[in-house]
Image (cartoon, rainbow, N blue to C red; front, side):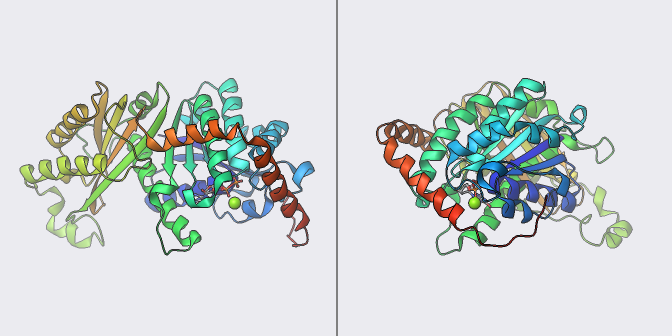
Length: 392
Ligand SMILES: Nc1nc2c(ncn2[C@@H]2O[C@H](COP(=O)(O)OP(=O)(O)O)[C@@H](O)[C@H]2O)c(=O)[nH]1
Ligand SMILES: [Mg+2]
């Protein structure tokens, strides 16, 4: 599946950057175009992979490249004011070559939290391609303003996009680690899961003799109907003579060697269970999911139709959904068999309920919160003496 990715704000930009790196490393080709949008110049300069011409600094007249702090209302305002500049970068995307847009943003901050829903609404008006969101929820230790921003942005974002895929930092936070190295690992996790999911729709015909390859329309159909999605993942290392140097395997010819069918099937079904019952990007009750998609990736000799069919049936029983799709994503030189489970239209999500309550409560002490975020912004703008090389 080919995506036009737009990273909004710092987290969004960093994650899109990581997707580009993943694409180069694995040759998976899922990012057709990448754009980063931010009100903080330093964050845009910190990116490695997003092309310079596709980095859009918004709100210069308002915040002079310093960002909006955690003021997501200001984030939304400047996104609206500068939507033409964002569109200018999107005009460079060959939209007829993409299957969908993916807007990536942290929901707890200011720029991405406020801006991502504004951009989603804009893109939906102009294009017929689906517009998906990848929203990152803040850790509960980040403080009240982040939770509040997330609560508000989440409600708007889910309404504007065709499907909101969610990653909850709070469920993935590790104690005793610096925030930065923590994010590094978390971002790897995000990119691995979504990379396999979207990469599945990008296998070309002669790559391997796949039994039932997932194609983009299956991903799109699973996401259609909207709502919130979460992703599970599990993997197991397998022997594969095709990985590594490749020279030996050429002489031994072991790539065609049949593997034990019962073992292969059992491995697949247990990986499906582990993926669905293990830690999801957004923890939730899988029962009641409206749609699901199962993707099994790995060396083709370790994938089989029977295993995937069993896994699919099991998912139907567990979710109660009548719409569970499944297929494989053959990767000849991989040393892992991996299972990715996309659960779409999930309904029983404790974190989402918590955010809804926070949003309601916040209406009651809104003045206090406003003050707090204005102070944040003043601090940022006062701190005006760090010299940055001009980027634009
Ligand atoms: N997973 C992940 N989350 C991040 C990262 N950086 C920031 N966040 C989260 O995103 C939220 C918003 O931060 P940030 O993206 O800097 O805000 P913005 O630049 O104003 O949009 C934070 O509250 C964190 O929860 C990152 O690299 N990875
Ligand atoms: Mg930041």
